[in-house]
Image (cartoon, one colour):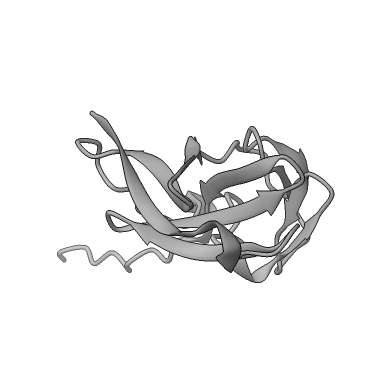
Length: 127
């Protein structure tokens, strides 16, 4: 079930700026563009960098760690090393407040490092 949650006032965010908001436990980057607001997951799909610490250039947000780029409107990775699309969220303005839509029944996303980067526990064999 999708519900809108208030995340701030329209006047709190300047043009082409981003802000980290937490909505029902999800970290979301809110970006003010020329035609309104967009909302995208905070974590880069490459190695989990916090995109809220990146920069907004044109219609993309740039990862602060390895310069991967994501389209703010669609979440699509437009430049590696990231390849996976990020979730995006609907945004609306109501009575001067910015609201972001989240699925309140869905599991909250949890970042996990790619399998190749996870440390493996040593195995012990019985003698």
